[in-house]
Amino acid sequence: MAVSVRDVAAAASVSVGTVSNVLNRPDKVAPDTVARVLAAIDELGFVRNDAARQLRAGRSRSIGLVVLDVRNPFFTEVARGAEDRAAEEGMTILLGNSDENTDRERSYLDLFEEQRVHGVLVTPLTDDLSRLERLRRRGTPVVLVDRVSEDRSLSSVSVDDVVGGELAVRHLIETGRRSIAFVGGPRSIRQVADRLEGARRAVAEKPGVALEVIETASLTVLDGRAAGEAIRERPVHERPDAIFAANDLLAMGVLQAFNMLGSVRVPEDVALIGYDDIDFAAAAVVPLSSIRQPAALIGYTAVDLLLKQAAASDGEAEAEQVVFQPELVVRESTGTRPR
Image 1: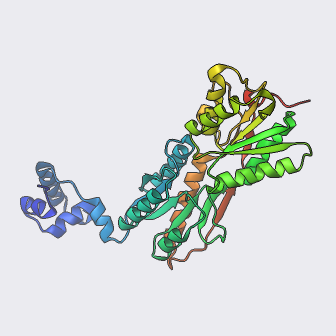
Image 2: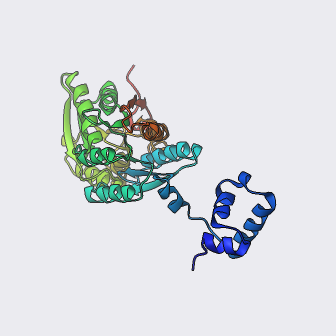
Image 3: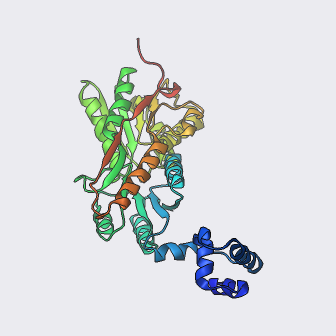
């Protein structure tokens, strides 16, 4: 049976209020009384229930974070950045993995609201943000992570993925590639749609360049491997000479498929570029060119915006949008730029 504050008070021969003061405002209690209460706490093995105390105050010291896929190192870095900023305020991050599933996303949002978290950071799966709007209106601050709302009604931290898609495909074109495949999906994920839009813009600028879209069910290594195997099985003249994968996990899956039988060489036969620049990209069998986005900084900045929202006295702080610019990182998988 858990030891209560009343048990500690009885053991130390003080009031419950005195025990509370020792726990929260020890400077207001005589030193010998503090010592007696602490001794009783130690003897009884009392552990304070901070969660209950915080909820009585109206809001917990935890922040909910819902990401698309915790297996993706990009989101691991986002969570690390969020954790660093939260720790500066003596707060913690509660991590939820939607696994690209709308029902799981909804369950985490419901759970975090029930726990009265300080606020919610979320990378939503679709463009339907009505659930998040209702959450905000009911008093839980919300910040979008790696996304931006179309009407700018919610604060957000994102990267310009349209620009990122343009950077990737322009680089492939500059290396002499003319038949490019975009591998990624589902397109209901805004980041995928924006990266594809950027790819299309880059292709439209260069006559004679074709873009094929190979949609995947998700953004995993396995889906990338399946796409790579399908391309590998084509006759040589029907294969693209370059691939832009919507993230690095897909690109690594494609690379695995090409390396299995050694029938498709990267970059000699097919140039390959990914997105996110996760740590594994540089360590791949063929170091992977990628589009870098500042994952940890995204998480750190998202918590910063959330704290501003929560601190607003009227609960109606103006929404802010922070947009970072992506960066092209060139490695062996795309070869060298033509001179």
